[in-house]
Length: 424
Image (cartoon, rainbow, N blue to C red; front, top):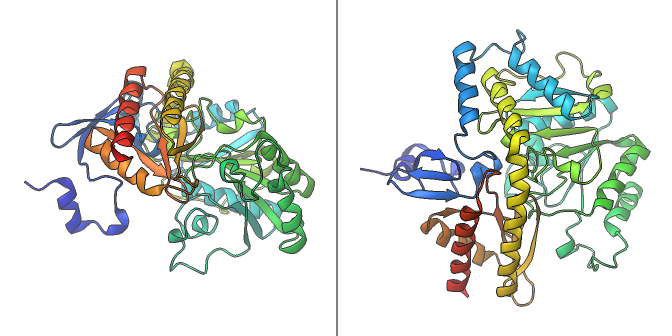
């Protein structure tokens, strides 16, 4: 009998390719179960979606109960309890000075965020960052700077988009030392405003508070604070894309909490509903109230089942998952640091909570992307799913669920250890 992968080749185009060839039939906790009966440890978590693990009992219960009540009402047509209650909860969690608009995906939320900024400021330009990933729709591809492949054959894209350097301290674009640098990454905005775009023409600066696909890069706190100051000075909206780094991934519900910087607008998706399609644009009330009916919309946003599941997801995070994620994140990072001491090919280990990247380098510190591909292949052959990232594809990312155990972390690190040992 043909495998799911073999069957897919006849009906699914290459654009819908996968990171593995695994066909799975169910999931539970940190594990997926394949069509061949194998149990596979999933440290991809559906690309940071299943932050509570697969088929969390509270999530399943909430979904089933809501399905029995209402599957779709249409948020353009009627109001329903799970939608309003989730909005109330998110407003409460973000200081009671925000409002929420629900859509389906991270890209859609980011489109909504830049539309909100443009609409309310009446300005044309957007500043994004090199190494960023915000989506694959035409507008979000326009503000994505992690790979030219996402833009190839789609030009021309959204106009008036400008790219700044992200503070990638391990590979500083300004060739500075982390301990003594004079923060040229902040000074770049003065140069940009002088030579490229007047600051009063900029609607928004959009950034990931922790860069995801670009390499799991954690910026200095003072950088985010400086960007906040720049936005305040010129009336620019600061947008945080928390599609991957939000909803518990870093051990806090929202990643920007680690930096003490509040955005004007931020986006959530992926883990917000533990695998059900949902995303959110969360903006300051003073901005959201200026966004009138008809200026934005969609059919499936804020689905009743997705909203009910999101409420259950938040409750689970508040009732111990975030705490466990913090503990296990520190445990995992310590284990990975020991690997760094053991192997010269590991150049850097970084991250917060259970959003951890391991960067691989050659002797001259050049990116070593080939070994990441080989480690991932070895891992999946030995029962572990891992993903890569980084603009040079040389970062191995660990995205274990917040519910992960020490034993599962030990297993994963042991497999990676064996892989590196076999490859060097």
